[in-house]
Length: 86
Image (cartoon, rainbow, N blue to C red):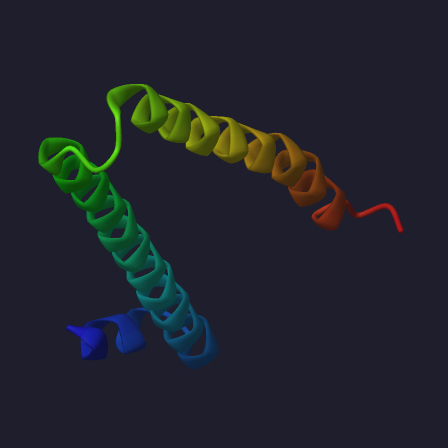
């Protein structure tokens, strides 16, 4: 599979692209595992009665707000870092 890519693209582009694609896939996989693990942990704690439902709702809202704030801060940084005007 990679040999056909090596024949089609120049060597530095092919290896770099494969490494970046693998790194992105690995990061997405680890992120998905962390989210699924946190969700399972919170669900088990709620079922066991350790965390009340109101506190659990507050935790999920806080996680969603932090994620939105991270996106709001990262989008301008992304455009700034990719700017050609320096």
